[in-house]
Length: 317
Image (cartoon, rainbow, N blue to C red):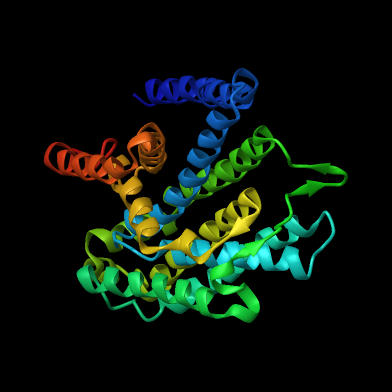
């Protein structure tokens, strides 16, 4: 039996380069097969929302708490990155320095919201997190001397590497592909580690997890830190991709849409949030000519899903 098991494991390991290599190769050559800037823009958005949904899945999927304030972390990362490149780091390396700093600022906000919500669950939890997201947005809207308030931030520089500037959609595609892969690998490794198992144990039964020696405070705050950090990174990318920021980019509806991507694909499934991002971003673009029908479609889709696949498309039955 052991020999048979070892043989199967060896076969699976030998197939891993193909399992990962072929899809990765397809992703690398994808921009070369697409001539439409609009289609590439949509694909970049899918990549951006996939990274954001993956970061939210740490809280919503692994920890099992529905957070409605994820746009707040995005906003902190985006504005931090934009302000740094506008006012502090003006060289070509500005974006690359502001990228981790934006993530770290969002991480600090993760501590600020994570600690007060440790003992809050269910409806109270998502009300508090929604309040956090709105507080961040109102600060950005009213701190005019720093954020220009309703005027927004303009002239945010595009990323550069030496003299090479990211101008084309395909350049941003490779940038968000790299950021998304880093997020995916990090989330996957965390999910398969002791930390990930501790999060799942808390999700299933926090009292039983605490009885077994899981430190609830530590692992809950850690989930917020990691989730906020990766959301902050995505926010910095978003700011430099659009070259413009406005507080209304981070309204409560944005948080709800990201959470719906996670639920639609399947909470805690790694690939589920990516599938959810593909479907919802794609649907919004397809339905753009009838913009008023988009939310109707999303609403109907979620109702049907909750009836037939309550755990999401890739979730456990």
